[in-house]
Image (cartoon, rainbow, N blue to C red):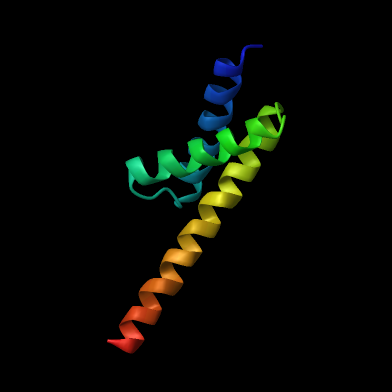
Length: 78
């Protein structure tokens, strides 16, 4: 399977999961986060679609959590 097909499949798996779980955020930001995570893994040699998708979901969740913490901190500090 080509790298392009691998990326497309992993992206679709991650996107679909986040959409079904209700976690999908703004489309552009979500897509960029997923693709960045997949690209970083490809650079390390990872080619398994499910692993790429799972780690991309984890990266997305981490980014969302960090954004929430930052927003809460800004609210508290005014």
